[in-house]
Image 1 (cartoon, rainbow, N blue to C red):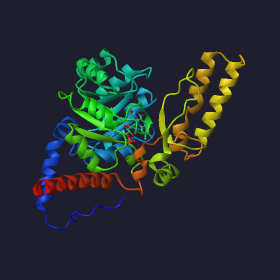
Image 2 (image 1 turned 180 degrees about the horizontal axis):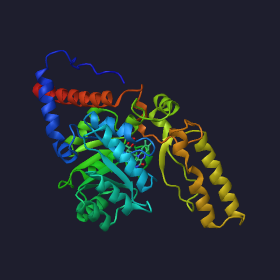
Image 3 (image 1 turned 180 degrees about the vertical axis):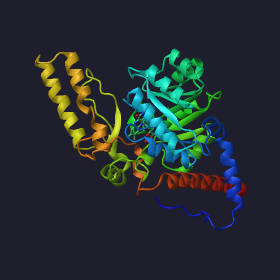
Image 4 (image 1 turned 90 degrees about the horizontal axis):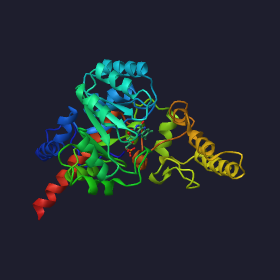
Length: 360
Ligand SMILES: Cc1cc2nc3c(=O)[nH]c(=O)nc-3n(C[C@H](O)[C@H](O)[C@H](O)COP(=O)(O)O)c2cc1C
C-alpha cells in the first residue's frame, strides 16, 4: 500500500489536528473498544488455518482484537492453541466457533475454562442454550447477522454484539453487500455494538461505517497476507497479484444441487469444480447416483482444499478464499503496519472532513 500523504513522522511534534482527529476516532469507536478491551476497534476476523497463535497474538499486540479460528479442531487441540496464544499476548482475543461442530458444547467449555472473554459464533444462528452457556460462564457472545430480522432475533436471544458481514468478504458469504446490510441494520440496532465486515481495506471506508453507527470493523483478507500470517508464501503472493474482480463466489451449476457461496480467487480448482458439478449432474441424470449421493459428491469437492492452499501453497488447485479487498493489497506488511495504516487513513479522512466543514 502506498503511504498516505499528510502523515506525521513519528519524530515530529504531534500535529494538533491529528490529535483532535484521534480523539474523535476514539469517540466514534468507543463502544467497540470498550466491548473488546482493545486500543482500536479492529477485529482480525477468524480465518481457518490462518488465524492461529501467531496472527491472533500479533493483531492483539498491535492494539487490535485477534480471533482464533477453531474450524474443525477437537477440544484438546483448541485448548492447546488458546494456551499458546495466551503465552504470546496478555491482551484480549476471541475464539470463533462454528455452530455445526459436533462437539460445540465441549469447545465452549474449553474457552470458558481458559478464561477466553469473547466467543464468536459463526456458521448459522446459534441456539439459545449455547448463548446462555457462554454468558453464564462469564464470556461475551458475538454472532453474525446476515439480515436485519436475524439481527433483531439475535439481540432478543441475548447476544452481546453482532458482526454484519457483506458479500464482498472472503470465505463463506451471504448474498447481501455491506453497503446494503449497513443501511438495513446500523440505524436500527443501537443497544449492542455492531461491527462491519466485508471488503474493507482502508481506514477512510471504516470511518464512514463508524459514522453510520458501527462500533468497529472486522477485516480478514488484509491480515491473511501479512508477514505475521503463517500462510504459504505462494498464498500471499496470489493475494498481492490479485485484483478485486478475481475474488469471486463459487458458481452453482444446477439449482437442484445447491452450492454454498464461498468467495475466493478463481483458479484451476474453480474450473475443475464446474466440470465436477457437470459430471455429477450427468451421473445423477443417468441414474448412477441418487440425489443425496450427488449432493454429497458436490459438497465434498472442496474438502481439505483451504489447507491445501494456505499450508501447502497449492494456489492452483486449493481454495484461495479471499475478499474483494484483496485488490488493495500490494505488498506483504506486518500486522502492526496494517493497523497503523488503517488508523492513519481514518485520521486523514476525519481531518479532511473537518477542513471541509471549516470551509463551508
Ligand atoms: C481465507 C479465509 C478464511 C476464513 N475463514 C473463516 C472462518 O473459519 N470462520 C469465519 O467466521 N469467517 C471466516 N472468514 C471470514 C473472515 O473472518 C472475515 O469476516 C472476512 O475475511 C472479512 O472480509 P474481508 O476478507 O473482505 O476482510 C474467512 C475469510 C478468509 C479470507
